[in-house]
Image (cartoon, rainbow, N blue to C red; front, side, top):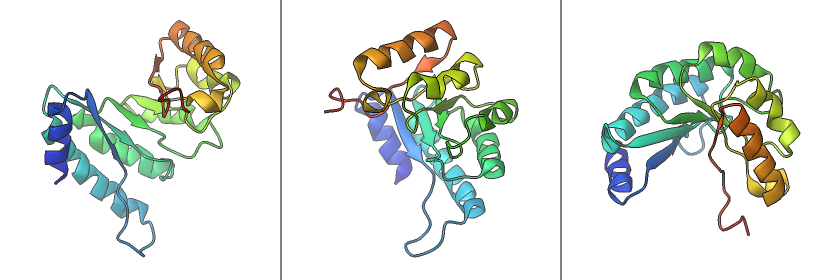
Length: 168
């Protein structure tokens, strides 16, 4: 049960529970419209599980097209996620300029990007709320710290992605 799992996570001392877009039944094609509805139902359970004091986040895993990403973001807004991650595919980061105007939940991206230059435009224009860059992808600790400084100067949070223990 998703609600119980989310509750157990918070009870175990974790600050937040991270959830992902729903998967279709085994062997079935990904139907984004149906998966948005199913994901939303799961998010309701997660919110109930973490309670008012717990946080939760949703990773879209770049699986949705623009309209479905906006629709899901709008649906989960009242559930107050800590962030929504990787709303759409990363080939065109400029898409976040339009997404930013339509999506009110905090947006996190970064794991698909490499150098600080890949994400700098999103940070400088405050098109995202959190950078989720991955230590090995950005080029190590020094480059990661440069990304952290960039984020700090533009009021963009930094939530490391897959970095422990120093990403082996």
